[in-house]
View 1 (cartoon, rainbow, N blue to C red):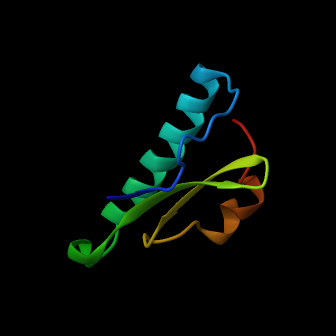
View 2: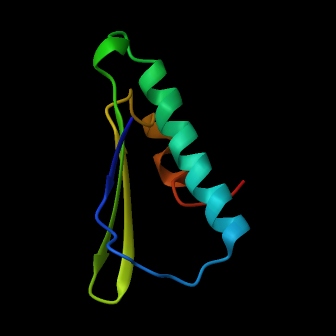
Length: 79
């Protein structure tokens, strides 16, 4: 797990519970995808937090198995 915090005092108004739920879900899914790799020793989940203009950017990436094609149209939806 890698965390790159380049926020430098970044501040954002958020719904704390919704933010926690969303970010936790994405990180959990990333960890699950990495766990499914055949070569688990080289898996990673990376979280990068930084400002860009007037926005707070959070990038979460992994090198897990990826999302099956049949589910790609559901990315960004709820339920």
